Length: 252
Image (cartoon, rainbow, N blue to C red; front, side, top):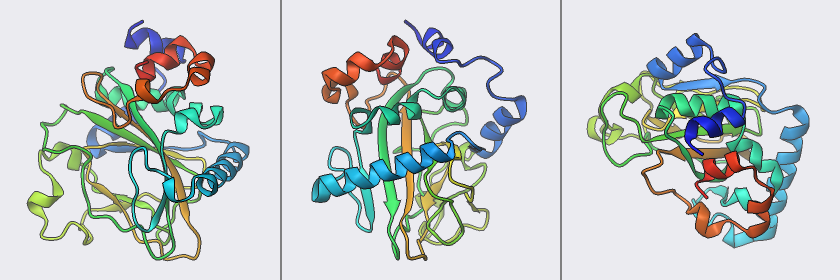
């Protein structure tokens, strides 16, 4: 199986994204996709991630990354079939594929909840060096399990920075400070925001009394290492339930 066959099997066509959506991704470096998750899916995912965080305790997120002031979970591919939507949804895959020019695999599937009084990140790109416009290696998606607001730690992005050929640290004295062109990604729960991971982005400070929760299904080109080695971690029972196309997306 190749990427085109896998994407077709998962319902992706050339018309899955509109021309305007593709242009938005190309020009701005991000694209909100509303109503990808139903209210019922949002509620279940919220309960399930809360359960997993409580179960794993101090070990939560260790497979990939732990971060002060947040609750993290990793290796979600193995932890409930409900998370499969995060790497098989056709609208999401179409957007990721557009950024990565059809050359994609899941790098990791994680959860991040910015806790009250925490969550601020400096602007950054998810790649170690600057790239030429169009030569992209990584693309992420944020699955909103809570409404993202200007007050609860929503992600900020700098539109068009994917085409800058620069990194924030190279041009900003302090990437933790606001950027004059930044946009806060505010949207209701159930939205998925696709962002080219070369677009400058970062979490903002959660100024509310509740965690701000989101899932991240992160993709990379197939010639690059995964953030979490899916083949090394994949459990036999997970492999057995996945379709051949989903296995291709995981590179297993």
